[in-house]
Length: 110
Image 1 (tube, rainbow, N blue to C red):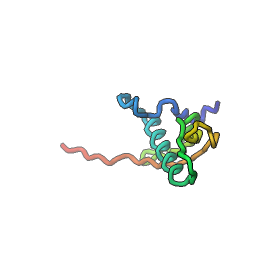
Image 2: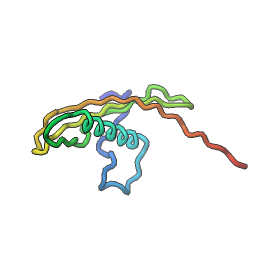
Image 3: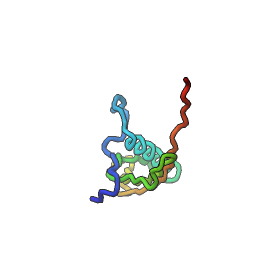
């Protein structure tokens, strides 16, 4: 285990049966990345059979720039691709995305 890598909270990515739980910022980014991965597979994986994506099984987040103006977050998740028969057709799929986070500008009205 490398402590320089942030722990990616794959076990707590929000799904339909957990709508009431609040997410922390890492879980929010995890959910966004999982959505991106899901869309990429559906659009780019041409196969006759229906393909589903299992819950992420591993991953990490790293923050490479943590200034006041922006954060650059690199993330990678690992999942299995499963056919409609339940057969895992691709054991591990890796995706790495870089997110640039900029804080919202707020105005103080006196």
